[in-house]
Length: 125
Image (cartoon, rainbow, N blue to C red; front, side):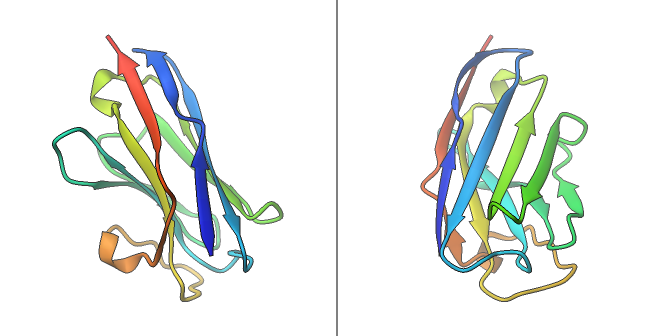
């Protein structure tokens, strides 16, 4: 499985961006997927996950502003980010798990087997 994240860029505070994560290889319908981010000088942190049923979970810092979704027909996942702040500046990574799971949604990096290369989001004040 290869993941390709895209959609990052420079945006002003209060603006929006939509990230995409395209998976190539086996269909990921039954696999949980997630977004993580890593700000400069900080550890990578979990942002959101979406299970195979489409249920989503969010970190407190982004809940209400970010929305994760997936399109199984396209083997893709998305992250709509609204009301961005400079604290959202980071490289955003998508990830997925090798084992299929109906309802699992995981927040630990160690649970994920495949990672995209990351896409940089910069929010100016």
